[in-house]
Length: 287
Image (cartoon, rainbow, N blue to C red):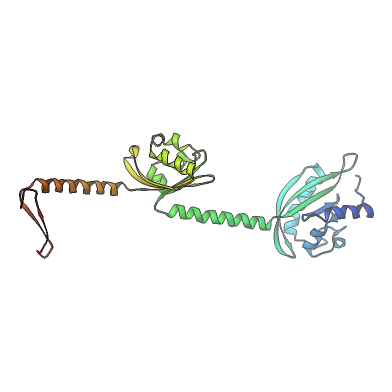
């Protein structure tokens, strides 16, 4: 099997090109020895390039628990000519770092595999940032699930993208029935109602809206706060049926009392709890 042979001039040109990359780049021969390591790779290991070239990872005392699985992938590339991508965590002078890597075969002019090239990128900060985003998202979702209001989010196609537990209870629909479904299709009674008009107004004018509305299918009144944003609409709703009914009952009682007062011939005295007259109402038929 032909071996790759790089002369000093070729190595110098190669190193000039590859050491300009922030990625760690290694070239392995068929015995899995290092033919080349660029400057950033050597610096991350606290070694010089000459310390690495010609050595096997065992001679460099790299951790076996990390390198043995890596070497197995390297063997596969050298034997089968496949390209493999994966992730690895490795100790460096900067501490243990996370990397993504791609292993690719290098072929000679006759097509035979003479080496393997590893391009390794430090993804530590990227993964930390992604984890911070995930943690932030988890915290937001925890808050949305703990609030007493129903909450749901719609995208710009009016599809549900999130529905908290309280909203599922208020709408009497499981999230599986709502996710990525168009609100006007899955809740058709809203399509010709104040819900439709106000949600569209919020998006068209990019202003928050607040309103109360009766939803006949559930025989319930809802107080709604809707907030538009670039990618959709956030909606908070609470069931205010009992308050609305209590207010309606109070109005009915007040109207009934007013009717009695307006049509009675008696003098009506109102006393406080100690029996003192606090006010006096006289009918239109009195003096």
